[in-house]
Length: 145
Image 1: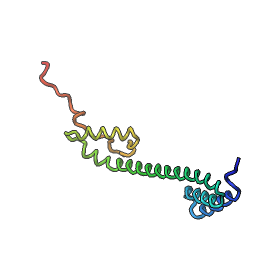
Image 2: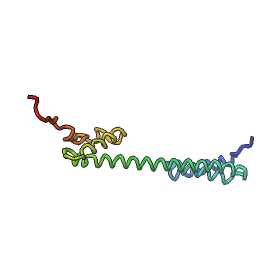
Image 3: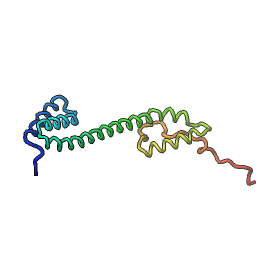
Image 4: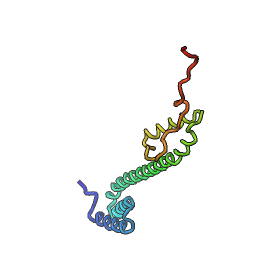
């Protein structure tokens, strides 16, 4: 079996990795990329073509990680928005004689179920709006007497 990674490639990758770490030890993707580029630069044509295939897979993985990080950031921002508007929306909806309290409470149930909002975010204030339609006394027509 042909060895695709030569000692010269290993040495070049180590040197590039160490140099990249000195610049920014938190940029692990940049460090790996620098090591791969350096290793490919000293390889033979067969090694380079085989390594290019692996680098392409690496680049795809990096792109996927970056998309996942962007989605996570966006999700966290959306969660914070829900927390930020909860108090104002509850105060608006609470006690209204319209569809607003029910609609608000349904949305809050979904937010709580999804883990976007919990009792700790509402502090001392209630999590749900007062809904007169649910809390109203039963209506009687006529009397039994």
